[in-house]
Length: 159
Image 1 (cartoon, rainbow, N blue to C red):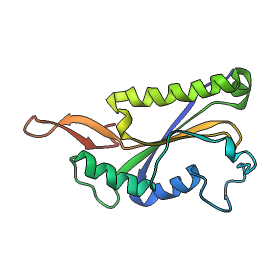
Image 2: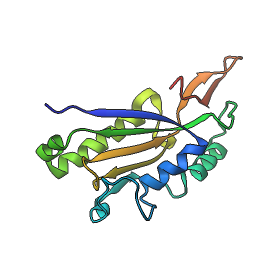
Image 3: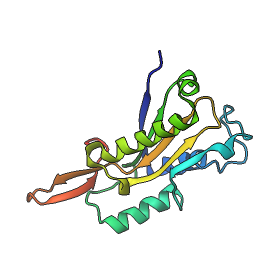
Image 4: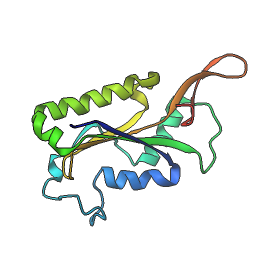
């Protein structure tokens, strides 16, 4: 019996560009030996980042005027990975596999009212063992400040 796998990883500023190198397939020699370079052209984006993850985050902060004090070791982004076992994807086929990942993307957009604007990148990898979606997002929570004013702030713990 197949089952869904969802993993969430909290990332600091120092960690996010390494994820970008892997997710965007920018490395010349991959340390992950499961990657089949002859299949990389099959990968596709649901939402494509234009800049590195660090630059996307800095742009995001500037455009959204988010509250909260960020330190050098603060969690500023999360990566969720959605997948299942290979037999599940073989059974449902290419069209339903695409729909599966589209639904995963929609789920996170709606989860805790996160919204699509807080998603930095969403890429589906079909060049490794089992198909999977890497979804990078800024963990924004909608809350109130000490005066009771509604604010958005980055807080992976509360998200």
